[in-house]
Image (cartoon, rainbow, N blue to C red; front, side, top):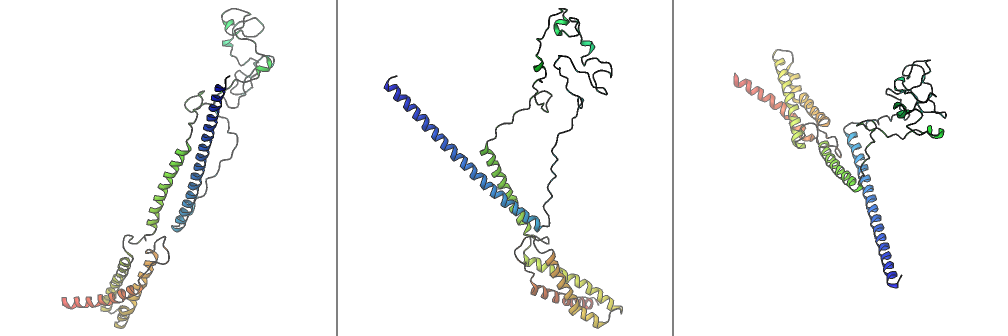
Length: 313
C-alpha cells in the first residue's frame, strides 16, 4: 500500500468517525428534546388533573373509584381439547394409552392406540405403521426416517393464533414514532385545556338567570318576591273584607310583615341559586336595593289596589 492510499484511507476513517460523532450528538440532542417534552406534558397533565379535581369538588362530584384490577393467574383451559394431555411418542416409539372417560380417543379398556383403525395400513408385521410406503404396499420401506428417542419428546414449534384464523401468526405491531405520539398528546392536552376553560366559565355562572348581570338578577329576584308578597297581601285584604282579619293586623302585615318576608326570601334565593359554583368571595346581594324594593313594592301594591277598587266603583 502506497502512502497516498494510506492517507486516503485515514481521511475516510476520520470522516466516518466525524459523521458518527455528529450522528451521536444529534441523537443525544433529540433524546434531550424528547425528555424535555415528556416532562413538560407530564407537568401539564398533572396541573390539569388537579384543576379537574377542584372543579369536581366545586360542583359536588367526587372522584370515581378505581376499577378493580383482575387477579393474575393461569386462564382456565377452554375448547374441545381442554383437559386432554398431548399425545407424544415415548422413548420406545409407542403411543401411550388414552385416558378413560369422555373425550378419549378410544373406548375405556380397549387398549387400542389413539390412531384410528381406519387409517392403519399393513406393514412389516411388527405392529408398526409404515406410513405412506405401507399404504402403497411396499413392506419394510419406511416413508419417514426413524427419530431418536431423545428427539421424539420434543414438540413442534407452534405459532400464536391470531383472532383472524387459527394457526396464523399474530401481526407484529408497527413501530411507534415518539415525536408523533408527543404531538398527539400535546394536541389532546390543548383540547383538554379548551374544554376546561369552558367548564370554568360555566362554573362561574349561577344557576338562576346565568346570562344576567348580578344587579339585574338581584332586582328581578327582589321584585319577584315583592310580587309574591303582593299576592298574599290581596288575600289578606279579601279576608279583611269578610271579617276574618281585623284592620290592625292587615296594616301590620302590609307595612312590615310582608315586606320583611319578601326581603329575606329574596336574600335566601340569591344565596342559594344566585351564587356561582366557583367564585372568589361572596357575590353581592345588594341589600339596600332589595330592602327598598320590598318595603316600597308591597305598600304601593296596596295603594294601587285601593285606587283600582275606588275607580271601579
